[in-house]
Image 1 (tube, rainbow, N blue to C red):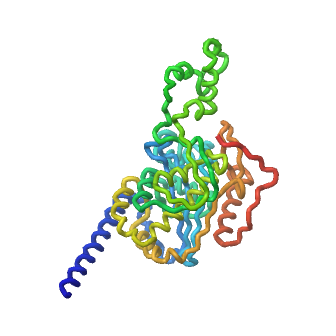
Image 2 (image 1 turned 30 degrees about the vertical axis):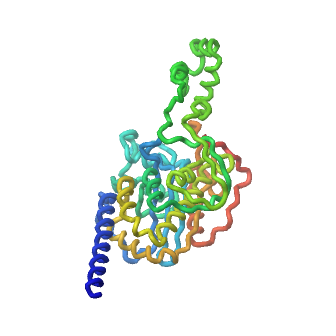
Image 3 (image 1 turned 90 degrees about the vertical axis):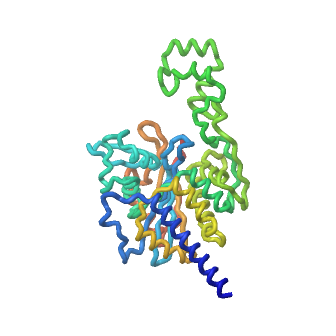
Length: 403
């Protein structure tokens, strides 16, 4: 018996050491220190509120590789045991800082990509955030609109997300509303011409406003081949009709569903459904998915899957959470069940309104006017304090169709 106990103790010690080394290895590979803030990167001992920005981008197999169509601020109060999950719409129209002082607005989902490749916009002032690390400017700008000091970020490639869900054995989600999306983009097919290469060559000179009007050659072509007129119109206005192979039909019935990674990704990214479409509905589904993942992570049996999960995610995850912060968050993880969670989606049903930019883009701005984020900050603060009344749409708001 004594030998058995000694062997068991040895195995247990080896297992603990293995998981510790695995966690450490994973962390070292995803950690990106904040270059100009190292001296201030220690956690204040009396700090009880933290905000972490989660950025999800499509990855190399999708169009818009680094466009962050998923932007969620997680706000934690360790003293009150409260957590708030705030989804930010991708179409938020935000002012970006410039070196020259020139006015520059862009959609929220483009900021991270612009920050990663500053040479595409040399006038962008990336140093205003006090650091040159990934996502520092994104954190700074989103802090300005939410009124929350965003301490850290985590970026994740959707490819990692899909595989992570598979590794943990899938997730269980209660689909609240039956919906069908006829225009869900097929992975890697965003530029597929669907066998219409010859016709596309003929209309290509007249796409995107190039020689689109007053062209004798164009008029002659469309008169001689009338079918090309519809193809040209669809290619410009309704690409799902011109290039159907770029899209697939997905359907979700209401009720409890067990989803693998690919299915969960479609559930969380779909935005073209007539029944439950748009970015706000998508944001709510993304929050559901995060809740489902959290439940799975804290379930019995997750530890055995941890090594495989870490091996996979280290390829696609980046963060600036420092070692001492990790230690503190791990301590809080043991009491995660004690936290009350509130979900919030900023939308045109509370503090935003839809409009068009000067160049015709569908955008979302504060209900009180362009760049007036104070009411938005107040709304978020009131939600944290538990004093926000049920929001109602502003009278006279008109629905503006998204692109």
